[in-house]
Length: 434
Image 1 (cartoon, helix red, strand yellow):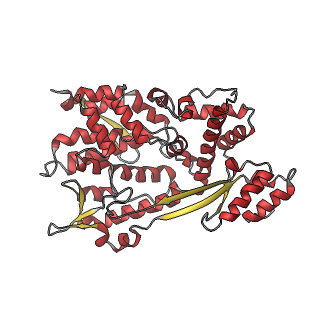
Image 2 (cartoon, rainbow, N blue to C red; image 1 turned 180 degrees about the horizontal axis):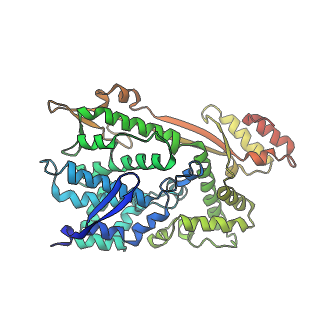
Image 3 (cartoon, helix red, strand yellow; image 1 turned 120 degrees about the horizontal axis):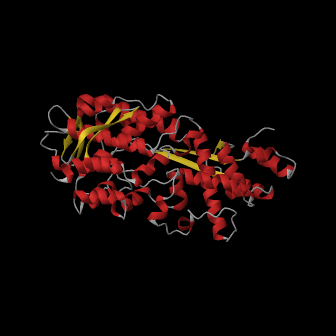
């Protein structure tokens, strides 16, 4: 029997709070889970700084990746099996792509990417195709199998149906993180009827479609996603933690470029600071390493790095106000001047942060980030785009919502032992009493 077809002597299961059990029968999947690159995901939180707001949000990319795998396994083994539109030879490709789709995430994920200006999907593909244990396992399937898996994750594969399973407006990735994140944050917004959605899924040429009878379950999913983004993912307190995290890394990078003598040299960050991250160095980074540096950098002589690390570790976060940069630009420039005069560096202590989400969109040719619409299969066999059938979805289709917050250290402004006049002017502009 070939390695690709090899089954474990006994099925392995992971007990999971969301899916109850995650089932592994394939030798390839079991071996991938055991690689050091996949095990690294245990040390990277799924929700970044959200634990500063929702204390239960300590779950990892490891558990999420297993969850995405399990949803895809159920789809290809139960829902799609025997359907003429489904190519059974794509089964292992789908399972591996689902399991490995988040392999390249760095510590604190998206905040890390913003600072160092890279895409985790680039590193995911580099791990799959590079000199890694993951690559060694995939090559046992076939010499070109790592490339095929990487192409699915990059969305360049000719296997469009497989891509849609893990990357579309309703996919296994989103379904797992909504349910998992809702569970661990303790909120009710992210719950939807996944069982019903799976029952009405059908393979159709280049993408998954949904039976018209399951439209209300799909509507529920879209509204759950909308609520989770605004109530959890874009929570202003979590964003405050992310702002401070980004500023710590910016400051450390700036000090490195200025040849500052660190008491605790950031050797794990050097290639990132210099814009030439090597895969080996990147894989050595996880959140335990980053938090170690934040801990020891509290002893640095640089007052900004020292203060920001203390704030992040001890949850002394920045406060915020609603702020519209389009209409309040002059106020912002005045605040920058007053912060400087007050001896508070505005680059690190006056931060405008914006969050934006498009809950659902139909196909708009030529636009950036083209989104494949959700299609419904009608009883007569006709295929129709979701928003043409659902008044609820039509109401939010194509409507991007953006939220702006201005973050600042209220404690420094309340300390009027120095620069009393400037700080009072700042507080007046920010609408702060006392």
